[in-house]
Amino acid sequence: MADLKRTVFYDLHVELGAKIVPFAGYEMPVQYPMGVLKEHLHTRSDAGLFDVSHMGQVILKPKSGGYEAAALAFERLMPVDVLGLPQGRQRYGLFTNDAGGILDDLMFANRGDHLFVVVNAACKDQDIAHMRAHLSDACEVIAITDRALLALQGPKAEAALEALVPGVAAMKFMDVAILPWSGVDLWISRSGYTGEDGYEISVPESQAVAFARALLAEPGVAPIGLGARDSLRLEAGMCLYGHDIDTTTTPVEGNLTWAIQKARKAGGAREGGFPGAARILRELAEGPSRRRVGLRPEGRAPMREGTVVYAGPEGGEPIGAITSGGFGPSIEGPMAMAYLPANLKDGDTVYADVRGKRLAATLAPMPFHPTSYKR
Image 1 (tube, rainbow, N blue to C red):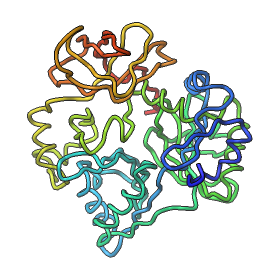
Image 2 (image 1 turned 45 degrees about the vertical axis):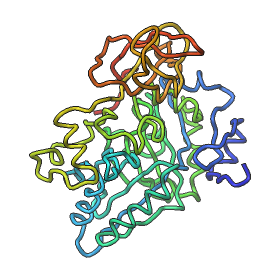
Image 3 (image 1 turned 180 degrees about the horizontal axis):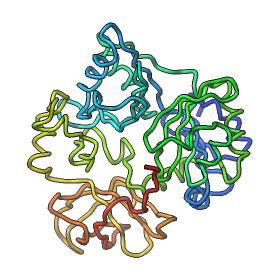
Image 4 (image 1 turned 60 degrees about the vertical axis):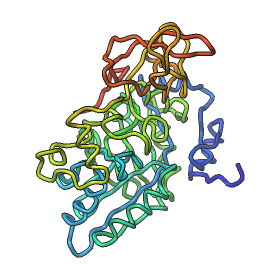
């Protein structure tokens, strides 16, 4: 792991007994002594603190055309309504390519006089290059390299953060705010990747470890690793870039049409105009040939990524493959996502090849576990 990067929390992870693994070019905690299963359940019942500092933080600072010009330029990179996002709010976005495939998924916020963007760790260098290549006329693309990023998730997240940062309890799901703590500004959004209520907090590296320790001292807060983060997001039906979505999947195939607002669809105020618009708008109108779906395997055996899926218990050609799969501690059973023919519907049965045996799985709605966002 000699050439891997470390976040500012590395020594704290080691002190807390984390098992460290390589992830997206970083040495990251996969679990702590509590173990993945208990960490998952703790986040659902109390509050979990996650180091997500490996993700990319970017500011888009408008040039002479002002915020509107910057928002419109950013909007031309994805099938998402940027211009219509109110100040103080955040939205999910997707960079697409000319074939309609997904280059990355991301979060972006309207912070009044600029946009704040958070991109995936494995894609951040290419995302920043992509933004600089296409946005430089309208805005300055500033990569933020001196701030850490924490996620505090779970039903006790609000009380824990409010105790340190008064005002966060008033925020609603997908609100953003800049609030002070110990002489520094925290960039806070009420969002996350677990299906639970919670926050993502950008904090200057100089105060990051002190802030993490202060959170961990609050009742019910425990450190949580990447293992539980993955099972939590899978129960919540959320995509992992590079697995459930990538350049070979369109937003419509990925079952992400909820992320394409009316303004960008056919007949909308700013219809099309994004990379891959012809294919994406066609699939919105006519439907895709395949779609990302949820599966609940029968029995207890998880069906992992790459598992081949068939229509029947024997014979026949493959109809798809699993992109994410595992055991859901909160639902007490296995769960998976797969790309399957779009004519299949919830309740239909398919068969997956697990160690040479075809085991049945039922198409099921996602999320597998109910979400609890504060609307």
